[in-house]
Length: 87
Image 1 (tube, rainbow, N blue to C red):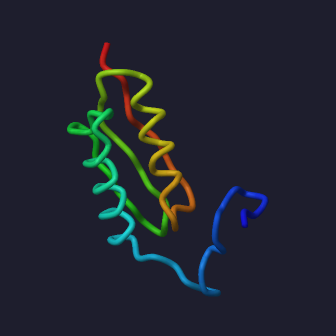
Image 2 (cartoon, rainbow, N blue to C red):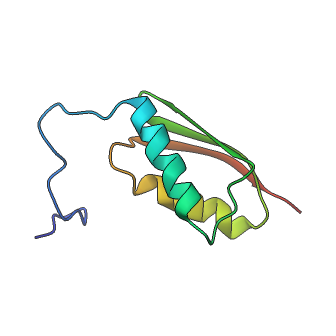
């Protein structure tokens, strides 16, 4: 059963919020497992469930793919993508 936003399950118990450190670890692990992305020069900072991505990637498509990966992480409320593609 999917909701209007495409989620398969409800968002969780009322008032539940993942900690910033847990979000950062989850995002970092997902980036490590994404073999099609080079995130070796990317930093991830989380504060108040807002994620700030900074650094460089070899290709422009990776910048957007990383943002999509972070957006799919449960608990992320906002993303500021400062990643730049190398020329």
